[in-house]
Image (cartoon, rainbow, N blue to C red; front, side, top):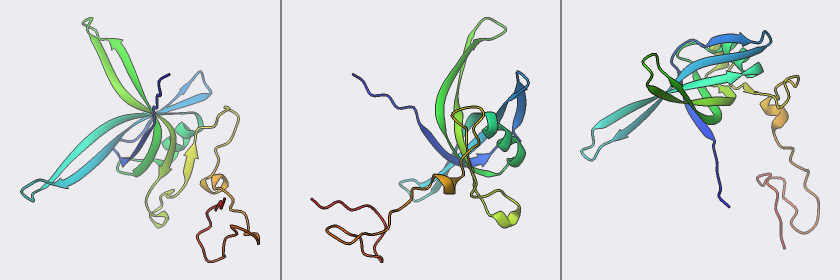
Length: 163
């Protein structure tokens, strides 16, 4: 048995306005780029920086929301999976490109600047389902109950289990 995981979590800035197309007249697909910057100091203390550019593809309601709210330069948190596209170019050569198929996007930034900051949009499991808001997905913490292992009100509200 082998374990496999294909999950990507990225925070970066949108490199171009998303291109949204309708497939089969009723399903949206949005393509956009993400630039992820990394900064560090080398062994001599010099500041270094590199940027990774990633192509992203969102589908359904997520694609529609990306097309509506995302513009070039907007900071985003993207969650998805890697997909390798392969094709033959016009000269008959093999080409390939790695991209992220987006499952969810969180728009980062301040709401006061007109952003949809803090909103979390997920691709629904079924096409007719509406995306869940971040608040609706937050786990509900049970109220403390007296007895062994009961939480005190000023403690952090995590579940405690005492044997």
